[in-house]
Length: 342
Image (cartoon, rainbow, N blue to C red; front, side, top):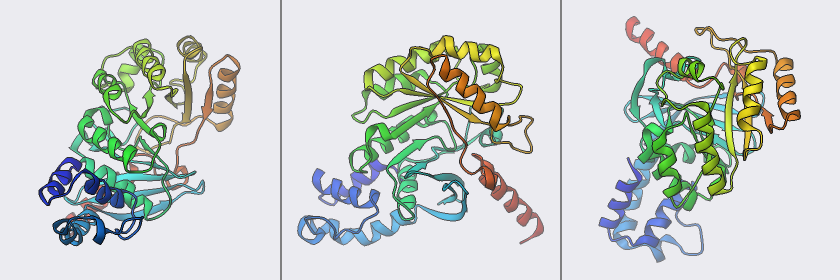
């Protein structure tokens, strides 16, 4: 289900814009229709009220929680089932945050990521994106949503922007607390400034070397690190939100002094913060996680050289729940069950 289709159905029942907003607000904030200053029976048109029970069931059935994997850091990774049997991952983050998925699989093929190993399977609809937020809100408050789960948001731009618009208008989430994450796609840089809700921007940098970036992100747009930063700086100045540059720190790959010099050259003086995240080790992939002490020393050195750097840990380390791993284990188990005739 797409949000625009939902709006069209409500309009066909006689809903005016204020009625649409009320129904969508109740859904996205996970609240009953009888809350608020105006009761639904006094405010909504009769055809809309009569359709609400069936519509609510349809919205609730858009996805279901298959399993929960709590982490010691207060996070919890959720394996979420979609109506067609596909699965995605959402992550409840500390401090009322939520990480959502925008695709089943991914076409970028980042060499260090589990999600893209099977390529892109399908797009997640705008309704399914918002439904991840609704599901999370039945478990705990959600005041920030980051599009950093499975998939490349710029490859599902219409659905993602539609979801962002609703989250930023009826979802009670501040625009700077909606974070659009991308490997860097010119279409996204063109589209983001046009929306009435302008999210904060996170750019996957990972290296300052063009050739290495093309190896690590083989199907990302062929932007140089400098071009990526130029796009990011322009958007940051437009919105007034600093860009978050993402750097997955991998032992012996992008943790050398030459990379640190490159980071200073690229980001010093920019309206930006560098999020340095030690790699979440995946058994089937050749990359290794550096020690926390080394990561902390690199972060401190960059900070001392004028680059605002935040050392972060990927949520779910202790449950082996790096992005795509839960889905991969579930899919593997499903195949084994089928072969065994279960």
